Image 1 (cartoon, protein in one colour):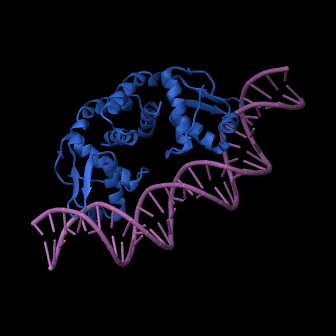
Image 2 (cartoon, rainbow over the protein chains, first blue to last red):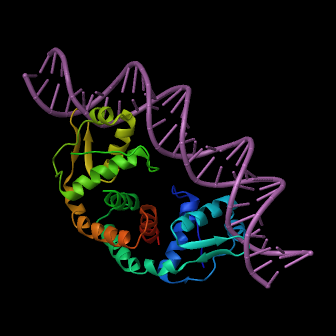
Image 3 (cartoon, rainbow over the protein chains, first blue to last red):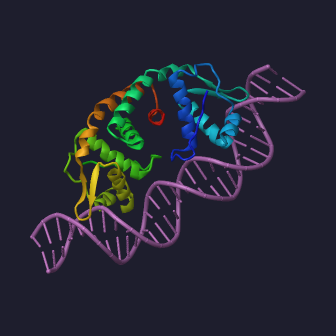
Length: 117
Length: 117
DNA sequence: GACTTGTACTAGTGAAACTATAACAATAGG
DNA sequence: CCTATTGTTATAGTTTCACTAGTACAAGTC
């Protein structure tokens, strides 16, 4: 379970953390029923605030990807399997976008625009 | 040329504007050589500041999607054609993601994560 | 019962987006 | 040439939000 963060990036830390978890789930590196590391541990090892990590966890909970319970931590839900089909389509799209010279933010904006239309 | 903005959204207005333009280009609604509406006009009709619109235009210029010249405005470059292949792949991906119940931000985060990995 | 872990609250800091004005410079078009 | 158009630049103020910090609390685990 490798959670990482780029302090230089413009995208918020809590979103980076959430994205990192989703990515691990999408890769199949973490499966339903497994636990994420405790928020306090992540906070310490990445040198970010506890609240920042919890915010990421809560975001994932709102998406239904994890269950949060005190004393037990963040547990991946069954819904994790849903991410697998995308782990094929997304790399293809990204590869094509890169070939065309599109920046990350441009591609992301196109996707978001399509989603909201 | 329909530019729109959602004041309630968390994504910056200038990015929404840029995304809106990219989307129009991707759809083929605007072609190379055509002009975008003047920044002042967009600012007034959408009730946002001139600088906010210009920031969006400058972002698109940095991506190579438009040329900016005083007195003439923002003109779509030849590069616009590059966006067309994506206008096929993106709707597919978004449709699949919606079917799986993924939120916009979750999908976007997965794409961004893949891009940076 | 002790420990772990998420929840909640309050408060402060810094960065970034957005707005508001105004003056300026290149281009287009009559 | 002259004028209107349109992007460029500068300055400054406001607001929002991410992030940090510290503390206390509650529901689980073992």
